[in-house]
Length: 305
Image: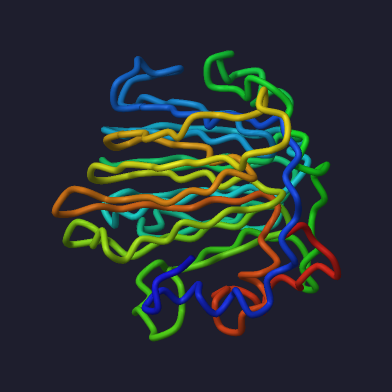
């Protein structure tokens, strides 16, 4: 149910047939980082964690310097900042960047890596939940309360033809008619960095929709937001859930579970949101020109919808 001006309306032509929801259903997870003590901190930084079904987020508020390492990392992960004043030095066994400006997204290869941050701003790390040590760092209140039966086991996408290496992508990408946001993918994750909104959302042009079998993590980095969710009715009334309206400031993250019908309003004069998926979405990937680094990563032969 997309407005005519929403680029996602084109996806309806290739969307899979609607599945019958049987229940029981899972509730969303809401992590208001702005209103919670950090899960970890050091001189010049604070960090919050969120553990969804198939991914782990680490959101870092930086005011100085911070360093994060991974040893024997199983798979690729992403790290990004929308703020040019943040500087990155990233060392891996398959590439290195030194004093690199922010407003970039980095895909870090498996194996050992060290990410050094300097400056002031917000930096986000995204991993899959295959990193059991990172899942364990997420307090119980920011992990899934129950297993969502709608979500199949995690399956990575094909390896990049040019091999695993450190990749950097500039986020200074001009909008293009018919393209939805700024989408990047790797073998494990997909991130859609939406344009910065400069006015509250038009409530006559919202986009209620659902995903049959994957979560959407909506990360808010600036502004005020409201998420609206509604679940299907099934023959078993015990599975029915009340509609939800979730208000959150920034930074925060909300896990929108399948198969809830959902839409989001930004209610402040300026707002910034990033949508994150694990593994990548097939429907976005099949739409020509939407995935900005599609040449680096092949599309899976089959994937969840």
